[in-house]
Length: 231
Image (cartoon, rainbow, N blue to C red; front, side, top):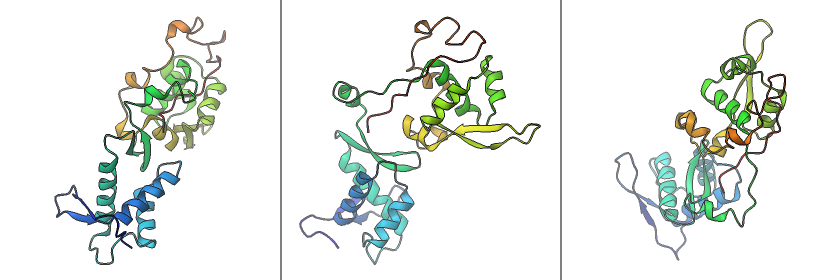
């Protein structure tokens, strides 16, 4: 299955083993597979396609190492280019190089941002999950409007994680895979400091008095759809 017009590439395996020869067909297959998917593609799914489509040589002793080497070689090919291969939300995806993304704001539609009250709620959920609505309200010190939760749900940033075994069995909230994709995180272990998560939202000075709260103390101001990295 090797393309005779392209030479094999050598990609080092990061665990210190000997270098693995990665076939050009394997690279092209993985490249096309990731490019065709809008969502991040897991390493397992990539391995399955490589295995079923002849992308792994029959004499390969360690198939997992070959897949890892293929991804490493593909990432090296795109290093320093306008599009990079990144690992995000438990999978692989092509994304615009971070240094170029700000330059595309004039030619690419820019989504609106989350209001500060909604972003603060999202940060609490991210760092205290799983947590109930009452626990979110206790941390913030204000009541939480249903509109804020609806905004985060519609943006696919949070999801219900079951119910807490206490009287009333309130819903437990946590972040979703969409949250990881939006912030370019591999997993929750890569969460930045809470202050960094809140840095790119409207200033409190631009919000109505009371921190975008309604007269009853709830977060009832309209929220906006968040910015996402240019993919």
